[in-house]
Image (tube, rainbow, N blue to C red; front, side):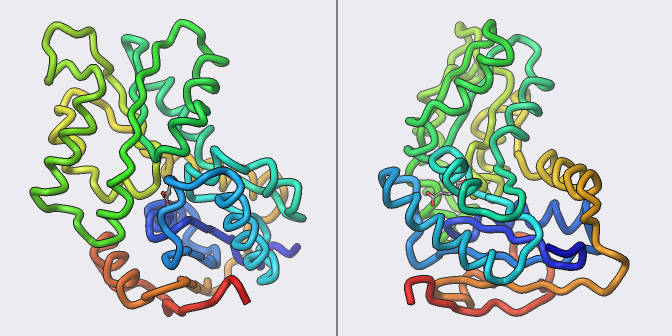
Length: 275
Ligand code: DGL
């Protein structure tokens, strides 16, 4: 492990790029390797065994590229098998969930937090457990939204069909704007790294009074802290960016560039994790 080695970041698809965006802001001198398993996305509808197998394959791939730290930019993987990745890894591993929990606890004024995520993340109960461990008085209302990841992967980030589906899912949560008699949540965790790509639609449907929590910003700050503590901040050299995708790299690049609003530095290359 060397301070000039890259940071490895991985997700089941393009969602982890929302985390890359914040890391590029927070740590502009760092080199990054991104891996998105677009051939096998979504993970969130699968069982623990399969998610763990896929996640360990990705972690191994990045470790072979000599990364100095692994960022699991996926709630589903973080909720399902962070321990298994930590056991396998020779370098520190950072998941997304703790950063989102800390941020939500700071944001809620009425102690009622909503969480949306994939089926695997919501059924793991990880958000509720972590929140209640810190403050047992906080109420947590959750809803799984399994169609949102495929919509984002298809680039359906601003269309009417997506808005209607978001409406359907958020109707399962006690939102004040939808049910004026309910006490309602005041804070909503986007418990999937794909969801910031739908942030405008989600905010519109949830109502402007709800604070949306995206783990990417606090995660990037935590990442800086860990690199500083471990004396692993890169020395000031020109950074290098690599993006590996297991299927249709051109489409991933297009979605990424729409999201970033500019051309991304570095190539998107297709790789095969199974060989
Ligand atoms: N970005 C992943 C997450 O944060 C999506 C998981 C999936 O592939 O379903 O959960």
